[in-house]
Length: 259
Image (cartoon, rainbow, N blue to C red; front, side):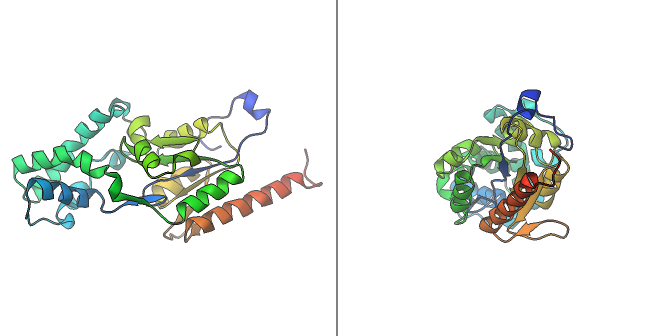
């Protein structure tokens, strides 16, 4: 499977599971306001009436996150507190670059973590649970693989999605960001080396191209991009995958196939 490890012999000799790997943010769920908006929310508490908007901080947030340097692994950040402490200078710098004073920026960056993971700011897309349930009922294993903060498992639980998944992986814990091949390899290993395995996500490069380089087929959702299989929503993506899987099964069962 591309650059991924081959399954152990004990698995090659048995029936392999089938699986779908899901992105999380902007695929299954979204936050009402992302990183720059969360800085505004933190400032609302620390400096009520401030003049800054989300766009004020976008230039300073375009670099410095682990996924901006995805080729570098970061196992040293597996501890949640260390992961957030590593990010605080980026958040503080983005605010100071926009003109926020040092002391206010320091307080707002310390508050940021609790603001970002507030469950009331997160919601699943309406098509998420029907798509997940359809695959589960059809016998597919499912994983989340997301470039995300350490609290991703808590968000998945809080949003009522936990029971749909066999594996939930956040890059903050595993130390690899998509599209690093080892991120996909970890998901494949934890899923039991499935075949077939698919990726569903909203990023052409991090999700779909990254998966393709590892021999994993993918469907881009909620947007389109030249050269990628695209679906307008999760229901359509699942339909595409199931139709393709049925075609593969028909081919495997055809009398003309050499066994």
